[in-house]
Image 1 (cartoon, rainbow, N blue to C red):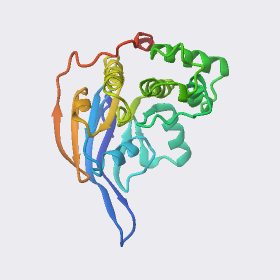
Image 2: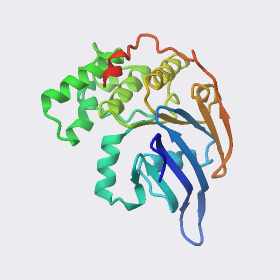
Image 3: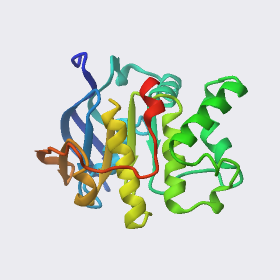
Length: 249
């Protein structure tokens, strides 16, 4: 069982796809810990296993073998319903392609996780308005996703990930579809969340984005290939974004 200050503990995790004739070892015995409030980058090229690892961390895939502890929970002991509930309440996911519903306005999109949690409508709206305002999207709540820029869409996706007050925020190539300036703002948001004590894990192939973190784990051919501890006390400001309200959440 992991120590109390560990939010994630991974022990000898493997993931195998396919059968006897087309067996692919995506992860080959990966072990690491993430401490509460840490900002971690998992860096690797396409096919390295980093996205598979993120999907396991996000409870979207189960390991073929090995142990995964999330806070005080032994993931292997949980059924599908418990995993779904835990994923919805304790994990916030941010995707490269935003994954917003195109027919719904931004306010509705951001409230969606709270609908599944059966939070009353008034409270859903209050919390969604607050987190969208923090993301400098207070004047875009009634807009459809097609009416927002890429940077605004990713800030809306971050707002949706934050609305459940998750234990861990997972980001899958979060700047991959953004221009350089929007990418800097998004990385500044993650850095700001880290300063507020939030746990953030991102996967990326881009070292320029990876170095916003406290630590980089390099993954290659399904194995951890190295670790780098960084010192970035002033790295990245999220221009126009005010995260101060989250300090009380």
